[in-house]
Image 1 (cartoon, rainbow, N blue to C red):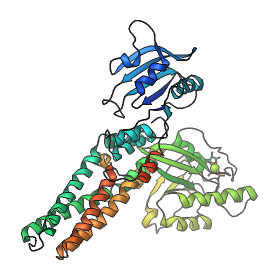
Image 2 (image 1 turned 180 degrees about the vertical axis):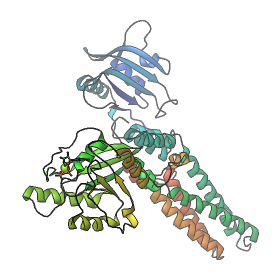
Image 3 (image 1 turned 90 degrees about the vertical axis):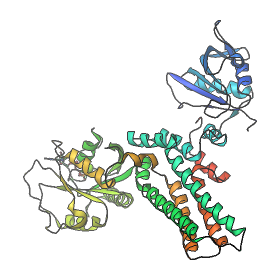
Image 4 (image 1 turned 90 degrees about the horizontal axis):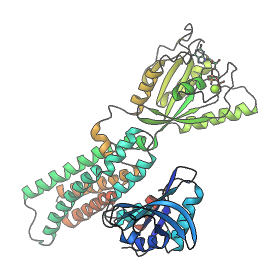
Length: 459
Ligand SMILES: Nc1nc2c(ncn2[C@@H]2O[C@H](COP(=O)(O)OP(=O)(O)OP(=O)(O)O)[C@@H](O)[C@H]2O)c(=O)[nH]1
Ligand SMILES: [Mg+2]
């Protein structure tokens, strides 16, 4: 399908034990022959080597010996790209990998763009689009749960469901179109009822998939949780407890934290970016005021607020204001310093979001596990169902499904109202196309570019 052969370093740039250079395309074996000298009687030149074998030898460029390597020969079609592929493991470090790559480029390969190997895998039919996206999810996953979801998607669990849905829409479309060709015949009542039933089942199924969108986002991107409260409440101490290490400076001086500090932690499978902020108060010098401005900006961006209150101090008017101010957000009240005598009394009227209060001591660590549970259950309503991981959709899928749903709804309404069948067919085709975008049955070059450009080079 492609007449050029692409090459790239597939491992991260930097020093390491090994680096891997990848080569894929029609001329892979010929190019590899030019740069690889087999060493020992059991090694072959790439074009003579059986598929799926490792050859030991040297990479050379003219007279210059570059590195001693292991070279894997993988012949089409049993490869990731479905093209002839060679993977060269050389010594780690920037220079050996770069010189091996240069030798391949000099021998006729072209430097691969981001995600180009995966794009070829897609265009050659090895993966569909949802599976190709799962490759990127897998690389970027920050928790085991996200990894599990990426693996399910890569295995085609989402694609199977999407394909069934699309087939179903196409089937209905074919029925409707058959009647358009014979304008005298109206759809028989029981056929119409049957088509409506199918469409409704499809709509219900799409709604079910759409319901996983939030969870899919959380798995992929995590959530941002701002730790706020007045100075000295123990915000930085709480960040350190949640991370399990001394990240932020803690001191008895109010106004210690001036800049915002962001760190990611894995909270019961959910990646959470915690943002420690400058204590909120009116006074303060110029730097502290800037810190407070940043606290406010973090607050605005956060999906979750951990409002830290000092159990050893009575509630102030400022605290009251903050309690009211954050009431509209997803929030957890953290009553810190539970090791001290309790002086903090919360207003009796704690309905709504204020209900959630966790007592902790950042000195003893008491309550921290309960706080993690509370965070997890607040961002992740309900259990993490095994079936959900299989289909946790991303925002592109969500967008396509929303369009498909709207079009399928129009088709359903039109069919029920005995509208012209042409109209029904048009909406159905739109729905099927939108669903097809998810797996890449209907795509545009722009869409592919936007998906694959977010990949690493060499993937
Ligand atoms: N007794 C007790 N002291 C605590 C606890 N948590 C924090 N502290 C103390 O409270 C003081 C303030 O802690 P920080 O974590 O720096 O408070 P902060 O909210 O980040 O303060 P600013 O950055 O100034 O806004 C320090 O002296 C901590 O040792 C706790 O659970 N119990
Ligand atoms: Mg602090």
